[in-house]
Image (cartoon, rainbow, N blue to C red; front, side, top):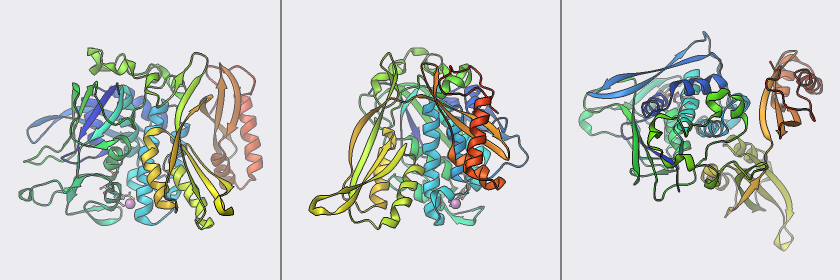
Length: 466
Ligand SMILES: O=C([S-])c1cc(C(=O)S)c[n+]([C@@H]2O[C@H](COP(=O)(O)O)[C@@H](O)[C@H]2O)c1
Ligand code: NI
């Protein structure tokens, strides 16, 4: 593969702010990170960056200042809608959704609830959104197309949180660790280590890194060191990110070329420009500039329209309790699938059965394969690469009586072809305002038309959305 690679050293633990600090220290620009976070939660947080000492070593420290008095607590459904509606580069959106999907699946398992109902308490607070979206934006800014990481030090002892006292690794971290090498992380003389890996940090590692391993062979371009809040003698409480190019071989599942079109174009010049030409560590003209269409794992353009490569995972199943299927489909969507559906079939020996089909970004395939094996009775998952031609897509929020609805606008060659209110938003407003969904849907379409979003007309530079 070609393209810039990041290897993350999490041998002293990992938290969202440590990872963000390391990526900023490696050269990601704080204003790019701030712009991406503002696209999700406008005006809600301010991100700062400075230098501190950790056990005698210099480290970058990311600061997230929450600017709103009472940050809302969100469930995964709401947070996902927020990320989908935000004007982000598509690769940033996909990575951020993948991270939170990981967290949601882990929390659902720990608390024994449906994935969509996971309430994000601490991990859903604004600083976690800032950390996750910030890290994904920083990777984008650095032109990083693939990530790997070492084994994670998770800590030991007990910690106090929203759930009272928790054993370390805390339950969500233990769940997120399945399939990854971890250790408590310390020689005995350091005493009880406390919580070295937080759920957000662990979810970042699991969703962004394609494999667990040592530093790969590559030409190093920059090194970032990100400090955690605590400073204790004996070991620097830091995450290190080593950014390099021209890996001879390695994980391609997480390789994402830079976006060339889509919502990013509306996100102001800094998001649209793509990171590969002006991110600081790229002064040596590494190969990330070439990490575009040839990667094959994301949007490309053939000169006339954009195409995307996606994976289609499939399994024929004839012996699953049919009552389980709705939960399987919902779980796959919550875990980051682009789409998941069932088709009734007649199998060998005349057995009625279903084909489960799951469309996903290549880097999510391993996670979703695991989900299919865990939640259905299939003995195998087959897969094929699919080429998709997406419309240029963006979301415009419109105001209706009782709330706001995101309207999905699909266009091609600058002409609007589809104007579709997000039904989840319609249902929420209908529920909250006590009016029929049909009426709210109609109101959203009228509001969209008033904002200049009409099928068959040219895209306006700035629609008058809410
Ligand atoms: O908010 C929830 S549900 C939560 C769950 C768990 C579990 O392990 S379950 C742990 N925590 C603790 O919250 C803080 C903050 O975590 P971040 O990931 O937001 O940094 C941390 O101490 C976790 O152990 C919260
Ligand atoms: Ni929890």
